[in-house]
Amino acid sequence: MFDRITFDAQIMGGRACIRGMRIPVSVIVGQIAHGATFEEILEDYPDLEREDIQQAIEYAAWLTKEEVHTV
Image (cartoon, rainbow, N blue to C red; front, side, top):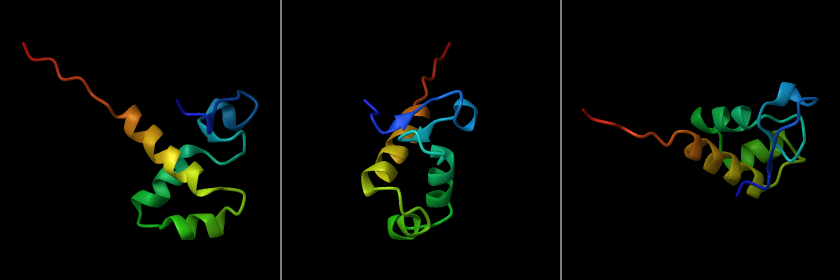
């Protein structure tokens, strides 16, 4: 489902990262939340690809799915 998101205890303490690099998903999503464009992020992180950024957003959205249970 998220083939570009990796988890490795030896990289960033097991945090969700992009393709095994030391670039946490949270950093990418945080930059987007603060108004950075894909182009700006790609300039700052030349090893990233557009698909990495898109999947980071999709992963963050997936994590926030909430179930509301009413009594």
